[in-house]
Amino acid sequence: DGGITQSPKYLFRKEGQNVTLSCEQNLNHDAMYWYRQDPGQGLRLIYYSQIVNDFQKGDIAEGYSVSREKKESFPLTVTSAQKNPTAFYLCASRASGNTIYFGEGSWLTVV
Amino acid sequence: GQSLEQPSEVTAVEGAIVQINCTYQTSGFYGLSWYQQHDGGAPTFLSYNALDGLEETGRFSSFLSRSDSYGYLLLQELQMKDSASYFCAVRDQGGKLIFGQGTELSVKP
Image (cartoon, rainbow over all chains, first blue to last red):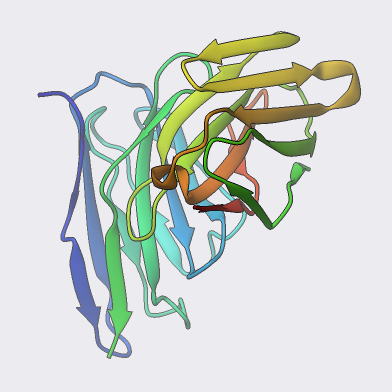
């Protein structure tokens, strides 16, 4: 089945650690996105990529990094520079127009 | 820059009709879309408008007026399962896709 797979679903990070969230899609979509969602809040754009080997910062890129070496993959690294990383992270890919498809999300908690 | 405004919460009763409005500011408008999100889940696509007018998909309809930078989502024959958060989103010419803060819809018996 086609879709977007995020892993892990739950992740715990210690202070000072970098962690990487995986996002893989087999929908053959060019555009991919990472969003952060805090409880009761909207989705805030972290990074997006329109094409392989190219990506742009969103509204809250500080403390995060991404890569887009393959069309299918768009991993997000939450670095130690991100001081408040506890949130729900959503990866998405876009078909034509504005129709985007989300993964199931990853819950990141700092311990 | 881009920004979207939508009401934070709306309450309606089962069987009723509810409208959720969205106003936006963006450079190079490439369409307005709507998403539904239940607690703890990922958003799912509901509707998309690139041109002015009404798009109907079952009980859900979405409207766009580009001259007014305004759109709305219309939910008919409300059911309890429609209780969720609803987000509008716009895309600009650079591919950036921004979401509103969301409207929490509560459907009462």
